[in-house]
Length: 248
Image (cartoon, rainbow, N blue to C red):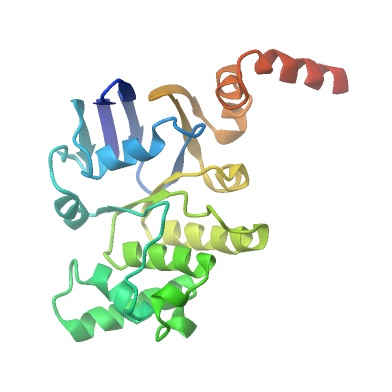
């Protein structure tokens, strides 16, 4: 579905991505994790056309897309959400979702009908006439998902869609993400909420300082010494291993 081949990007003296290569399979939920500043959001921006790579290529659905603008990539069926949700203030939830629908639907009436359908799928059907700016954080997160889903994507890249939610709200959103996958949409997500990664993701890659340092099933990756040190600091892998032996 999505293949990165030697993707690299530098901003001045910062190497945000260094020779990153992997393949995201179709029909699954996969994830990208790593400490703050690892380059995860930059990688999403490279994939979706918001930044251009210095080297390497991105292949989506069998065709190269690096160098294409975000709107062209979206028309091919790949969209992303953003960490900071910014609805169109002064417009209703229905109108906000319809913006996404207009990527493929020209008719205003049809786009609004699509918005209602998608709103029902994400649990916003009772807030269609509300000003989008009045939504709670959890509601705005659902709206961001709805706008992406309204474009009828093949692949959605979720950038910390659970950030800022409390444990109860997170539990409510997990089934929604699975339901989107069950609709035939491939999902690739960045997430710091490890509960969600362990519950949702079938395969995860770990990025640190722009480089991939591990990959595999989430349950295995979180025990990798390189991953432990990336999150907790040098020498912590040995300490964690020592504590586990002491409790064995």
